[in-house]
Image 1 (tube, rainbow, N blue to C red):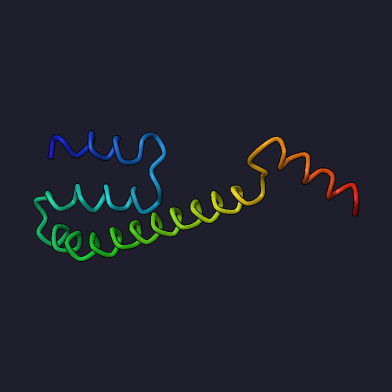
Image 2 (image 1 turned 60 degrees about the horizontal axis):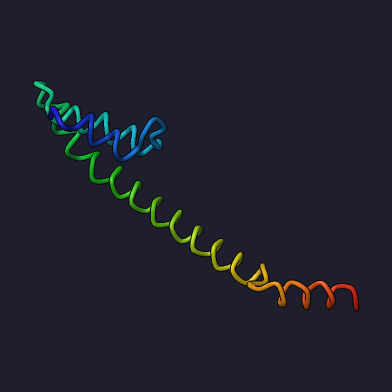
Length: 91
C-alpha cells in the first residue's frame, strides 16, 4: 500500500483521468476495515480499470490516425514542397 501513491504519480502525474481518480479511490478502499466497502471496491475496480483501458486504447488509436494524416499531409522533401506549391498555383 505504501508504494501505491508513487505508482499513481508515475501513471497519471498531476492530472489523473476521471477513471484514474476512481481507480485510486476504489484501490484505497480495498484496504478499508469496513468489509462492505472492501467488497464494493472489489466489484467496482474491474469496471473502472476496463474503462481506463478502453479510453487509453481509443486515445492511442486517435493519435495513430493523426500521425498518419500528418504524414500524408506534409510533403517530405523540399522538392515535394515546391511541387505541391506549384500544383496549388496551377489550380
